[in-house]
Length: 139
Image (cartoon, rainbow, N blue to C red; front, side):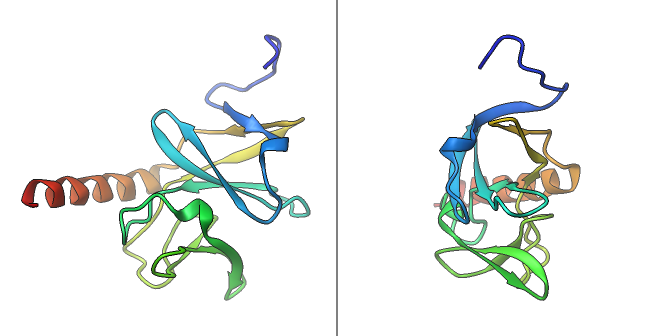
């Protein structure tokens, strides 16, 4: 990345537009967290960023999920148990108590930028991490 790259405070470059696959997901690593990036080149918001870890299986697979619309909402279906997560806020349509972290995402020229994780999703990430830790301790 060029040293004069104009990045606003809090926005982090994670990949190039050429790394994305239209209408599909790829995964980037941001501060040790896997983030699924979905690219919809014709949409007003072309890039969506959501946690890659499926809270139902514990597997990092959301980036391999299928994109679609349910009830007018843009969603990704987990490839394992098929739950649907809204891309705008990470909420699971089948179980609204489950939520994936969501990052603001945008393109700046040919660079994909992610902003800070949205606070509502941080609570969901913390619950998932706590549940995983309890499961590991019990096992």
